[in-house]
Image (cartoon, rainbow, N blue to C red; front, side, top):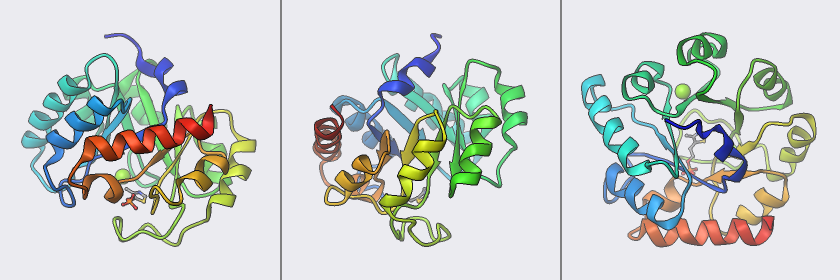
Length: 214
Ligand code: TZP
Ligand code: MG
């Protein structure tokens, strides 16, 4: 498989799956988002068996094809089992150096960070990008904490070279402030997967982000 890390420079809208919130189901959401042009997908599933996760992850990998990056949330074992493009891990998940040892140098590792100190450490440890969280208050992740505000992104942007993916409470109304604030990419879970038309919502987010960035 080709090394998809090069595609990280081009990401705009980033889909994170949520089977609990999804109207049409995870596979449908991924299919629609990819059709709309989404170039990075994170499979985030906490409610099913490892066996079922591996089956679903393999299907998502196929949907992502060679165009879109496919990452697995938390589960380095599942990422290895299906030869995903990488993982997205949190501060309390597997340490990044252990994940790197298991995955090798060519896979993508994204790390959730909440402040500049964690972002600097993530870059130092070899993360390929950081997920800066939460930008706004959100009820999608109960323990996400209070929003840090879009103005906090610039401080992190000025301190690190790796891309910043903003997450938490982002919708079409506030996404301009997030990109102008310095984020390279953004995630909007509920704003997309709770919609009846995931393809249209994804396309609208992509258009909005590209208009601001380029
Ligand atoms: N990590 C930090 S906030 C969050 C996750 C998974 C949830 C984001 O969901 P929404 O619906 O876009 O606020
Ligand atoms: Mg995690």
